[in-house]
Image (tube, rainbow, N blue to C red; front, side, top):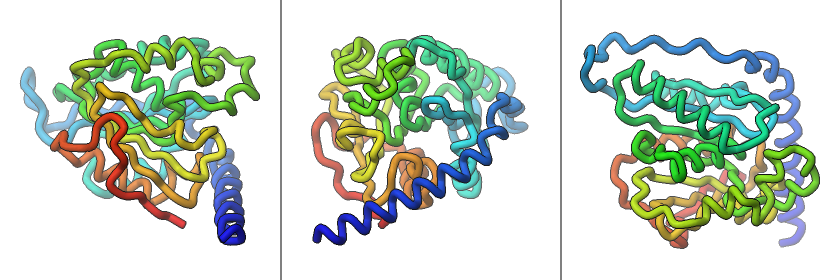
Length: 266
């Protein structure tokens, strides 16, 4: 049994290194902000838009939109056309400032497309920024579903190793921002879906990427056999993201309920 665990960990680590190498090559392509998509031709002037909600992708710490190249293609192949991404500056010193920037982008998308709501997919810190926007800045009136991939909801002790950056300090357990997010959120209308991996070596402990909050509608999805960098690129996770975005009914587990099943990608 121990040998099997070591083998699985070695495979996951090798995959992480391969993904890191590929991402470093793609990173320069995502530095510049993308061109904003025009309003869809079938969007009625002055009226509500038809079709699926726009999807906004939000990257993690010191990353950019290039991390979502494969996920974006997967969503587009399955009928999601209104996909956009937002870069926030690596010089950002406060998660709350990034959440305000996100809010402005969401309002711009809504005005341009005619959709009253959007969906958001956030990786790592990006999920935490989006969660702050939804819970603390009124974003629950504008975000239907928030999907988070490897997000440190309870903080990660890995953040102590790079605590010089203010954003990293806000990801430490017990930070002011995390205490604020743990506070009451009664009436929050957004659906939360949080993917967490049992081999995520950036989320320490790995369960910190589970979202447990009594006031939120939450669906936690456990993924086996991959690490932190693989979450936004693995096809099995992409399928789970598509399913989460397509689910209209709010009947998913809440609070501390266990997820009904785990996704295995080993």
